[in-house]
Amino acid sequence: MKLFLFFLFTLFVSASHAEELFVPLSQFDNDSQRLTNNKVLEFWGYHNYDNNDNYQNVLKLRYYNPLEAGDWQGRIRLDTSYASSYNSISSANNAGQYSAGNTMVTIWGQDKTFLKPLGALVGGRVIFPFGNNGQWAVGPQLNWSFVPTVNSLLGLTDFSPLIRYMYGFDTKNNSLVVNPTQPALMRSLQLYPTVGFQLSPNTMLRFWDENGAVYNSAGGGWFVPIDAMVTHRLTKNWVFAIGGSKQVVQTYRQYDWSTYAKISYNF
Image (cartoon, rainbow, N blue to C red):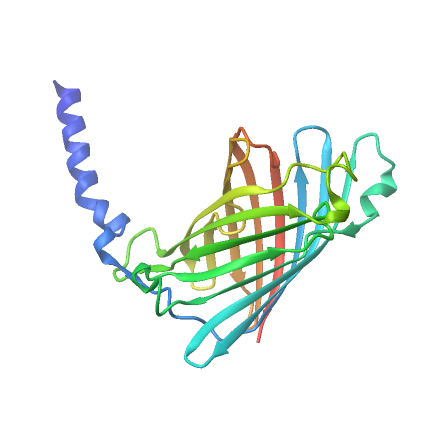
């Protein structure tokens, strides 16, 4: 009986403080249409492991730029990278031999007509064939940004989900007939339930910002990671971040774990 009363008391105390810890759904504003005009240049470094004695180092350059056409506003993101893959029996020099990695363009912006009721930013991504096993990949995306209108003890700053579907296809010179080792074409649903927390005036913790969940719509299977990144603003223009990602569901193989860091310049 004492244990039951203690449980009820704990539940009552937890409920009374829940609103202070968490933000009720009714206390969020859709802030998706507010786009920054900042230009951002980022330098990324990744170290990945696939749980099969295979490692990969990736150096990536990422650039954000505002877009405007009449009363329409949007953003464009350019990514290009170099990658180095190796394992425990490779030459030690292999880790320093880089080749072209993924290069892609992502554009998103306001939709004031057809999809306006969704209150989302609408866009798409194109992945170029060089560094992507000779495959092209294209796909649409929707993303939102919801900000709390009240403060919470957890310091929640935003909930910014994104959904994207990527569809890969071959060029005539890179079919399975020409290249029998060609991997399966990309058919993936990508989900980013990004959420941010303010740790201090210049430091933030963000989950699922860089790496989200992926569903393989071609053969089935999920890849679901735990992804976390800490960002710290060094000055008005410079930001440093470090993060990591670990798979928890991997019926669709991507990687076992990944660590990464970035330095960004805002201007």
